[in-house]
Image 1 (cartoon, rainbow, N blue to C red):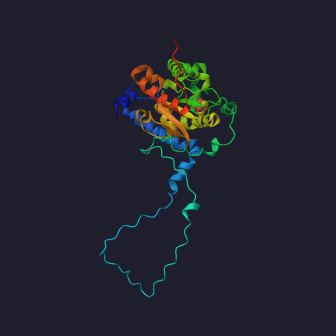
Image 2 (cartoon, protein in one colour):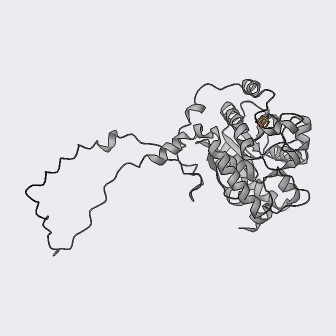
Image 3 (tube, protein in one colour):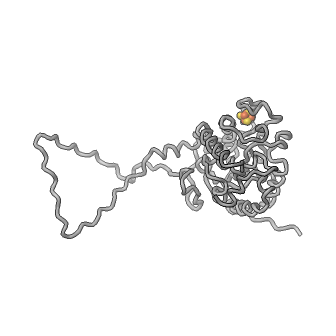
Length: 322
Ligand code: SF4
């Protein structure tokens, strides 16, 4: 574990459960189990079905190259066949490789080669992202005065999401904190102010991007969302991503990154590299703004991550005002 990873997971008195860097190793293990069981229940599966198909479809067969034989190697004779053995039936003719279907092979999210080579051709978007966009208003109406999980009992407001419904860039956090719960908008407290400054440093405004969370109601005591809560709420996040269809997603903090990527890898290993979410969307994990507030030295990491996002989006760093 790197210093950054350890620091990322060290609790501080000012930490909230929504900074994506929860407490000790035990809670990390709990969170890992939480995420795995939640992930298996998520309807994210339908966005990643081709990955599962990929897991059971073998790669096209390529015969091994014949080994060179020594010049004096003895020639083996086949064993004599008993007279009463049935003859071996002939093999069916093989289809030429040129007409065999090929399956896209995105990297499994827990594999060491998790990081995306963006220079390579992106996988084709899943069908859920190819059809007509479903309006965000329709998704929010379907969510309604939601009581699909126990988080509804303690909330003041559902924090659905905010921003440009056709944003090129989407930020995803963990869940609402006290300020967000009170105002019904994601990232409006001190961490939200820092996120707004990051967006401004990209030459953008909050209204240019779309911001949402994995769960839309505040967990009591700012604890991490539980598996059943993630399973109940995250399909609406998937619907939001499918509606906005951003070119890039930035996952803010450990919880959002691990949930979207269905991995247990720590944020310290995930950040700094592009991954793919929902099968094809480039996703950059980075530190949660709340973590940056108490660990200012990590701002450099986040700025490096954001600069990669800017490069992918073709955004130039705005000139400083004098
Ligand atoms: S967290 Fe999501 S699923 Fe749970 S009650 Fe709130 S809106 Fe509904």
